[in-house]
Length: 218
Image (cartoon, rainbow, N blue to C red; front, side):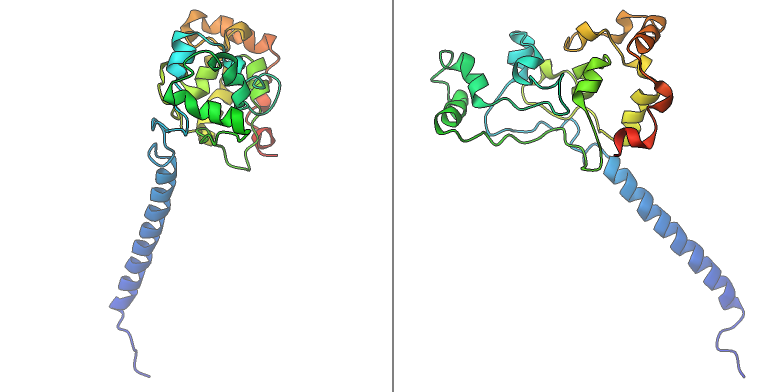
């Protein structure tokens, strides 16, 4: 029987398989990089909200404590978004005619919650508890950035698993005294690495278990 393909076609076939494998790996690698890209994850991209709210003013200039609005952050998994009643504590008298505050008045008068746009959003398969991080001395700014300088809030970190593991594997690089958790001006260098390592031990942080899968995936 005559051969359909000449022997040199074996070389062509091998090269074709290698090229296909290279293309496939390149596509998968590109997709992975795109998923982690700051553009895809909206890092440093200010998120315009239905009601203009300036953290720069309230936290930076007025020095309001994070817990005044997000009052569940140290007791529950979620940092709640404050209802209009919380805002009206001040704004029933302050800047009542300001157009930026009108949305708050409308929400308060109608009982319809403001449809805030979520800035920091984790996948459904990720378990995250705000209260445990607060109780272990991880400051708000470590994850949320310098919100006291943000006129419009944006995502300061990419929130990838690798980023989380950086802290879980070396909490002494990020930990601070519990009384400084809400202090936006706190600097890690305020304590030596030895002092921060002592806090890890004092706060009963078991570093050996922090990178176990079931810590974040339950």
